[in-house]
Image (cartoon, rainbow, N blue to C red; front, top):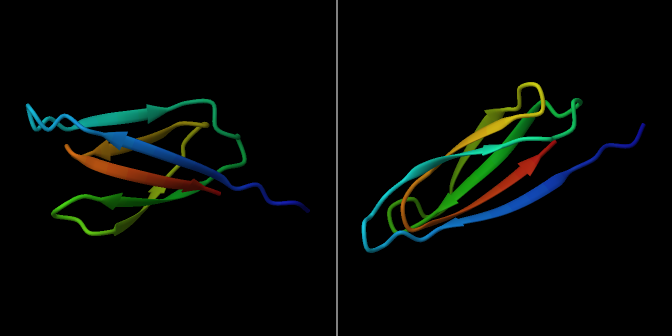
Length: 73
């Protein structure tokens, strides 16, 4: 059985208003169950979170001025 891994690189740079948002990623494989998410910014130097993928959808909190990597498995 082959496993598929999808890597997403996301960035938020709203430095002039310091806004955060939530990213909704749709269309992921129906077999995906979770994603390892890494947040990098001045406060979170590489914080890792394990998020659940539900029905091919992943919701990620995107802090202002950050880069986010999501590895979907």
